[in-house]
Image 1 (tube, rainbow, N blue to C red):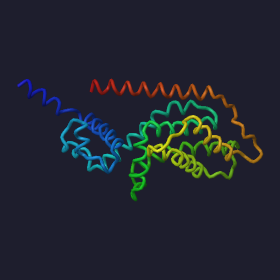
Image 2: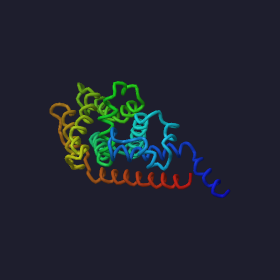
Image 3: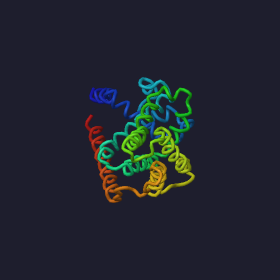
Length: 244
């Protein structure tokens, strides 16, 4: 009787916890093996459940990858939100976004590659929640440019959406070899170089290209604070998992 009671408790985990366990296992398997070579049975084994349990919450493997990617974008946005709001100055704000995205790719190259190769190539990608999350994430650059144009800091003929595309397109191109495990990139140097090039292109003709009010130690402190917030969030998640 005691064994039967224990088994019943294990099988009756809250649905939210079950989904979280499945998505964590799927994220590990997808990034280790790639989408094509990942099997639902592999994910079920990693999550410690039977294969049929996954189909209670996800339609198929594609749906599971989509949900994993959505969760990743939510994580990226949440981990930078508080620190980004504290950054002052257009150069520093641009640099923060660029640095944060580069750092996210460095932490999760396999997942970054899967989003680009598997999900964004889908003809229906623009209809997905992932597309909406990606647009909200990238549109912080658009808002910086719009405010800069309105304040006279940037040229009035600058198309904000084009700047956004150049920033994130440049980041992807620069880090593609790293995502494929064929190369590497220097995080701080790459963030500075991209930010400087974009900044100089945005400034009005004849204006100084110096970084206004640049204080590297301020940016470093903000990045350190963001890292501490991420570690705190990880500890809180761990504590929550241990006490569902």
